[in-house]
Image (tube, rainbow, N blue to C red; front, side, top):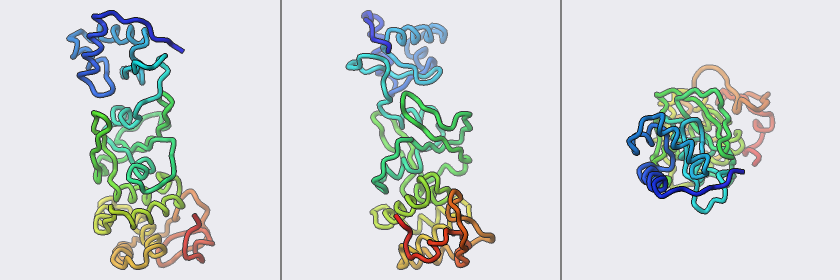
Length: 272
């Protein structure tokens, strides 16, 4: 455990200026610009501050300030969303993390789900004790996002409708279809429900499997949503898909061209 040592007045003033002129994180380039130093000198300054315990290195070239009350530099990330935005932009917080934010679930997920156009080698990084799960999406899929403030930083998060569609596109983004089904039901009873937007986003996403899963779940849990069910039925594509690619499925619901577990073919609801 690295402890924090003293910092001279000049260094304190310089660090205060860096923190004041940045938003939660700072890079070598930003420090060089703020302090009007060559990049190699800025790197040395950051290295010295790190050794003294006043800043903590998040990834190569990226740092965060250590809170004054912290006894060491072994700190957890104050807000992992800010780091996700900094490291994996362009993209957005999605899946179960967005579902938590929009109160579509009471389940607590320990891993931050990040959707990005980048293709990192490590898709399950652990940064300062925070777990991230990275999914790559095409640039054309960057729609249906809201910008939210996290302290002084703006971070993109999928809006409630896009969150639901992403999880129907890939149920693993919600922890599997059972929790996704619960989140879908919560969405339908929430103030954020927007059936026309749901269909619009589904068309834009361009994956026929989404409408098969959406139509199936709507017919099970919201049979009164006739317009939604009809819209899904009119958009059925050829071929059969699994309701959840990660689940064994041995019964075909021909009305939705969907393979489901045998008990789902008989039950009116999905087990919670």
